[in-house]
Length: 320
Image (cartoon, rainbow, N blue to C red; front, side, top):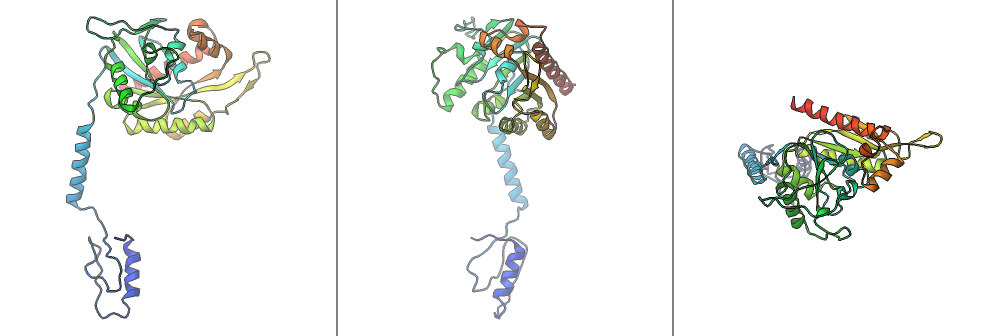
């Protein structure tokens, strides 16, 4: 079966039938009724008919029935996902700086960071209903795969095991009553992201990126993925936006200037805030002391509070 446009095939028939007595009938319907004897291929022009459109619609409906139904997490008012598409741009650090009654779920099964950032160790206890109790520090309940394995133990699992672990972290945890559950997503746009967005109603996604082009490419893929699964993109956080010398106060844009702002304009979303590249953020994160706790009056802590305020405002706009 060869395929070409009707105009090209019409021209081909005119050339090949110039000396033939048998008439050539050209139609724009589903096929060519008569073709010259010299013609090597029978060529069909496909048009989507009414019955075929109905078949496609039935297939879409069947696929929709096959998707899992979204089920809210008990006790949680709204779920926010923090993602980037790329590792090492500050998703986990940003996730740990929210306000209100907030819990954090570390969905990065292969590389959990929340235990270190929140200075938490130990195994979760079980309730009478056989649910895991989150570990708590700084008034924030946290759950992570890092609580269930040894610190340096590699998690070498196939996809189905990872999905099972995510399901348990979502459904078998007693979160109590939360305004927001912040899910720290792993890098990329794979099984974990799809599983969470298909199983849990997500109020919105926060995209975190550094300003350089290589990080912005993956950040855009992450944003486009959330749009495909009908999760609102609340906005973009530009992390490591500028470095200020602690001695002379000179500012240097190590990773570029305003790259995330340009991406936000392209996507038609807001910039939720800029987080500077500062030594105290790195030091406090390594010590498991969020900068909003260790240095609440610092400009760095204020930058995180502005991001949290912007996220809450966007959620209120969407719900209003």
